[in-house]
Length: 76
Image (tube, rainbow, N blue to C red; front, side, top):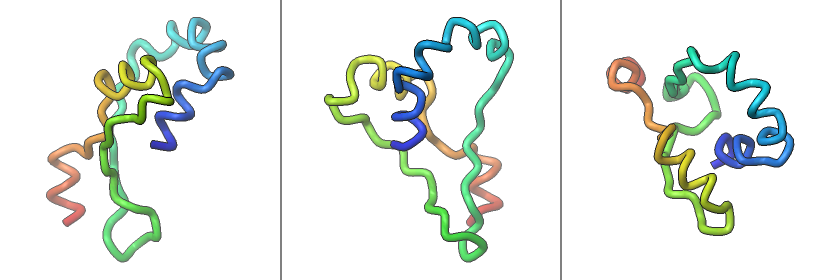
């Protein structure tokens, strides 16, 4: 949920139009930590709470936090 909160923050949205041109070619892939190699937790896509607003719901649907199948094979 932390990444999504960052994405919908006011400072991020204020710069979104300026960054859109730069980020049109970016592809995000979720890569989780390897078990036992880090204290980071595995990705767990969640539906955002309503208090984060419609923008968070839209982003969650467009950019779901799901690790790629190729990574899941390596991670586990």
